[in-house]
Length: 108
Image (cartoon, rainbow, N blue to C red; front, side, top):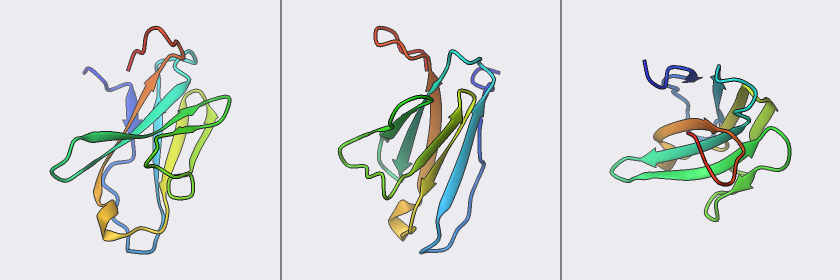
């Protein structure tokens, strides 16, 4: 089915104060080396947290902090997002997407 070549951790239950790490991987090939992480709070739209490239520094959105949302990107095909020091307000849907690193076209 469409989109099945990107997979991520299913439902994750954690306690307040814990850290939650979400894994994402894909089989689209090494050209898809950029990973985007989003979250959608209940009743709100999806918001980007960070763009995580395989090479170079992650690019965080203005309202997202590296201390709260550290990412790893060990290779083109995988990455993780951690949500640190969980509070009740972190309950949300978290999504990853991948793209090729072209500034003119973004293929999510």
